[in-house]
Amino acid sequence: MPRTIAVIQGHPDPSGGHLCHALADAYAEGASDAGHRILRVDVAGIDLDMLERREDHPGHKLPSELRSAEEAFLEADHIVFVFPLWLGLPPARLKAFFEQLLRPGLFYIHRKRGFPKPLLTGRSARLVVTMRTPIPAYRLYYRSHGLKAVKRHILDLVGIRPVRESLFGDVEKASAAKVEIWLAKLRQLGVEGK
Image 1 (cartoon, rainbow, N blue to C red):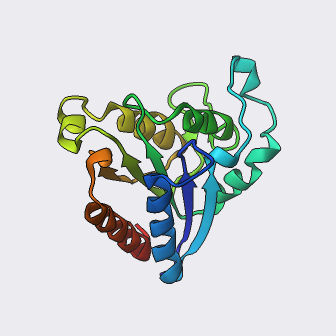
Image 2: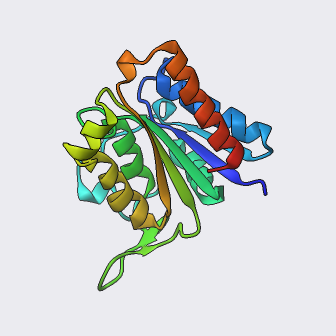
């Protein structure tokens, strides 16, 4: 059954040409070929300010530059986030994107007691993440803390689950043949809408 899928390109370099861009394109190509509706959001192309004070966030109107991203999140059945890990975490620009977009009242509601009420339930996600670190070292030594933060503190907050992951490590040492295998894997995930 065709799905509406938002592909969020989280690499902060607006010039493109990185592995993240190729992986996002491969996923979107496979999904589109399979009849899924694709909504693309390029975080690097959005003019974002860093939030510096609490009062900059709650109760304030969503910046107009984020309207298409808001629509993508609200319309999508499945959201694919593609980004590199820098110092074990998503790039600051992607974090700023989440801070600006995922505002109380739009994507979750604070309650007087307990956890916030999520407003994006019924959506699933996939994290497609590149890194220089070998995957076993990232999982065992670093305990995947950057991914856990995105899953628990961002996506779970707004009700997006389940969240699956596709991790690509040692990317700077990857041969062209290995990269082609990775791209084929992403195309197939796109076809399946997963």
